[in-house]
Image (cartoon, rainbow, N blue to C red):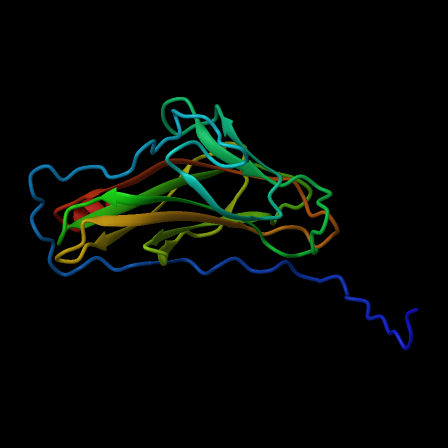
Amino acid sequence: MLCDASFVRIPTPTAAEPLPAAFSNSPPPVFPSVAAGCGQAVFNAGFDSGIFSGSGPPSPWNLVSGKNMSYLIFSSTARSETHSLTFGSCPPKDGYIPGTLVTFEISQAALVVCPNTVSRYDAYMAMLLATSNANLQCGLTLKVNEVAVATGSPLAYTAAKSFVDTTCCYQTGSEETTVKLNVAVNCTNNVAYGGAAIQPALDDLLFGPVSSATQVTS
C-alpha cells in the first residue's frame, strides 16, 4: 500500500539543451621535424571497410556511448570514397526527455604515433537530415586520450549536405608512442516529446604528422 505519496510534474523545457562551445587547441610555437616513418595513424578513417558489430561501428572503431540514439548505419553520402558513418534519432523515442541532447561517441585506441611530433587531427561531419525544427544543429568534438582538444561550430542542415571540417593539432610527449582518439557528436533536439529526426554523418577521421603551422590551418 502506498501512503502519503506526492507527485511532482516536471515542466516541459522551453529551450533545448545547448551544444558545447566551439574551441580549438592552439598550435605550438615550434614544430619539431617529422621523423622518417611517421604517417597517418587512423585505421579505416573513412568507414569504407569492415562490418557493424552488433550496434557498434565497423572495426577498429568502438562505440563509447550514445544517448537517445536510434540507429547507426553506413550512408552512401560521403566526403570521399564510398561510405560515411551515420547515426540518427527518430521520434518518438521512449524515455526521451524533451530538449535534451542526442549524442554518440566513437573511439579508436592504441594508435601508433611518433613521440615529440605535432599531428593534425581532422574529422568531417555533414547533416543529412533534420526535420521538424529549422534550429536543429549538431556539434563535433575531437578528443585525444579522453581530453577534448577541439569542438566545431554548430552545424545545421542544408540541402547541399556539405561535409564540414573540425580540426586542431596535438603534440605527443617525448615518450608518447600511442594515443586514443575519440570523436563525439552532440545534437540539439526539439522541446516536444520525441524530439525530431536528426541524422549527422562522419567521414575522413584523420590524425597525421605536420611540420608547420600552415599545414594545420590550410
